[in-house]
Amino acid sequence: MDAYRGFVMTLMAAELLSFHRLHEAFPNSSFWAFLAHHQSHVEWAGCSLHDLIQPSFSFLVGVALPYSIASRARLGQSFTVQFGHALRRSLILILLGIFLRSTHAEQTYFTFEDTLTQIGLGYPFLFLLGRTSSRTTWIAFGLILFGYWLAFILYPTPGSAFDYDQVGVSPDWTEHYTGLMAHFNKNSNLAWAFDKWFLNLFPRKSPFLFNGGGYATLSFIPTLGTMLLGLQAGRWLRSGLSQGDIIRHFLIAGAIGIAGGVLLHVAGICPIVKRIWTPAWVLFSGGWCFWLLTLFYYVIDVAGRRGWAFPFVVVGMNSIAIYCLVHLIDRFIINSFYTHLGHGPFLIFGPAYEQLLIGAATLAVFYLILWWMYRRKLFIRI
Image (cartoon, rainbow, N blue to C red; front, side, top):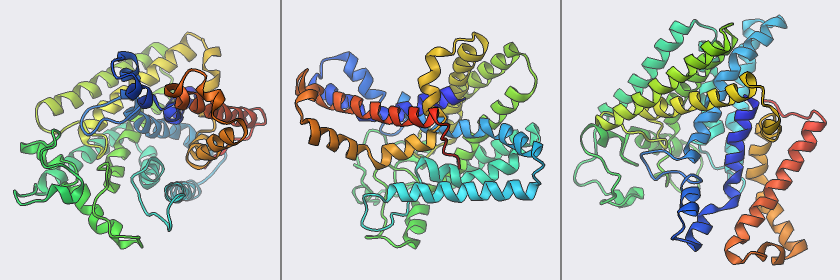
């Protein structure tokens, strides 16, 4: 789990490498085009490797829960104490998410669509379901996905007079859908309507009209579905099943999830859209999370090949620390390099590679900080 978590957090931090700059400098290079695509989010429907970062992080929260509950039970903690801890953790995640989003704002920027706040909003429900049977968990999972889908379908699509320009969407945008899928169009859906009401309840510099990326607060509901998939994976890991059976369970669950998501999309029932965390996205991304977990589990636990994963373990065991470092001091480190070394060392391969080299140097600093914390057993836990 730590290696998988470290892998996805490294992908997040690796945005500093700015592959899109190299793609712009070398537009005919399929290599940089490939890397740039998988280091950015797709515009609406579909998936890149970068799009799997948040669902992987959410999925792993679920995987870890059975271990956490068992550990606290061994310590003799009552349900009340454990649930109180879950509520505190939820509140801290929400407040930390808001704080990090507000670091460059003139006032508190109340937003609830980022990774930490989304997990925080759903965590108490995850904890409660983590104490139920697998059957109850699967029923809850199905109700969450169907209920979220139905709520979007029941919200009316915009009429012909709807001004898409006012919500940051081009009227002739190629990602517009018709039929049932139209209920999931960008900034004209149920989640967008909810945020137009909900986010304006908080103090803001100007009224909230839309999120430029189409992200929404209500996504925490289906994100809970992603965490429930991780919860079931964690239960299988602790169930006493043989390693071969665990791998089979993971592979089958992954195949069902990916196929189910694709089928819903192709059939025109529900698109695969991360930004509003559609039910099809829960299935599709959850399937990939199962397969990625299978890969790490097989290579590290079954095949016993652990050495290569050490850097990822260092990052994964301090995932909150790297998340905060990237959001708080990335520019400080970059500016410090330029202040003390100038631009010369980062221009050695030419201007096109400057962002790649300064990004790599910054990532190295982050890793050294995490390695120092790991050596001294300093782990930030919430």
